[in-house]
Amino acid sequence: MSVQIHASEWLNTPGPLELSSLRGRIVLLLAFQMHCPGCVIQAVPQAQRVRASFREDEVAVIGLHSVFENHAEAAPERLRDFVTEHQLSFPIAVDAASLDHPVPRTMRALQLPGTPTTVLFDRQGRLRLRRFGHLDDLRLGAMLGQLLSEPSAASAS
Image (cartoon, rainbow, N blue to C red):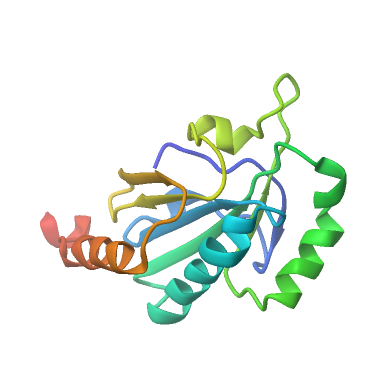
């Protein structure tokens, strides 16, 4: 995975995560904003369900709080309250602000069109899905099943 997560802060993890260190696992990265209705109602609960449904050594779920509007309402302390209130257990990166652009750094690097966006990387770190908007549970489950059924890099060699 050549993509890096540029985070100004991490929640629910003892330290920063590198996508490259998750090779061998499917990675579900959810770009969200806590004030985005589609994120709060559909995408964030879906990510939490995925986190609860799969072993961490098979599927890693990472939230990416990418704020590109209403910055004052999305301060890190409010995000911490949101994470506690919604009992989120997956690691969450606060996407680092761009110095020269309104869109945060990781969101720009991944060319994400907005929130919510679901991004899936396979076990080899290849980008397999970048989906803006709601992704149906059945469709996401089928895609995760397909990716899990593919051989890992270790077993393919």
